[in-house]
Length: 252
Image (cartoon, rainbow, N blue to C red):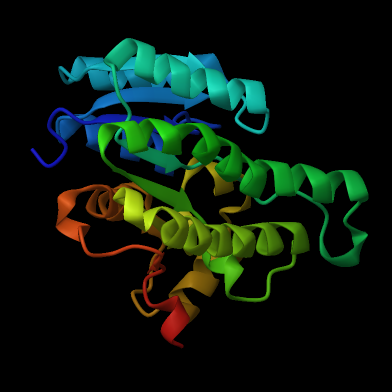
């Protein structure tokens, strides 16, 4: 087991709709690999659903309701993990979404909401997780960015905020390497997850078949496998990096 005796917090561990999202898949995989998991989500029912799936496989988990765009919730989430399991080793910052109107139609409120959801949430969780990791002698943080950080995207706020996640990841990696804390990113491309179920139509499927070398959507389980690699000792000499999970889309 690659995460035996580790304690892992997964924010956004529930799914917004039925199915397997990146956070849910990662929380389940972490537990299979021996981690004690804190399944956190703004929707407690969704967090509990993920926790129930972990318990059904014999894993150890608690579910916590938290809006990690709020500092008091981020602080409480980390404190709950530590008070329950005694330590914090792994953090997967998975909260995010393509929020806002397209182009310059984006409103000020939409812009601020997207920045809070996708970028500020990472900062707030790291603010409270990092000191706990330092006390334990180190840890690993994985942030969920997006290939939209590197390509033109119609929802400007989404693209800009995810680019911010990539930049923040590099800053954190450089700032805390001496404390034995590694910080990396995953950047999913065109994925088949509950978050995009409402736009999963023939046009999108055709676009994937034409533009993605592997000619299919990615799966949440494939994101989870990459997050596991970055969270485990298998990636012990990797920090500050962003790993595309895009079926080769970025090599075109």
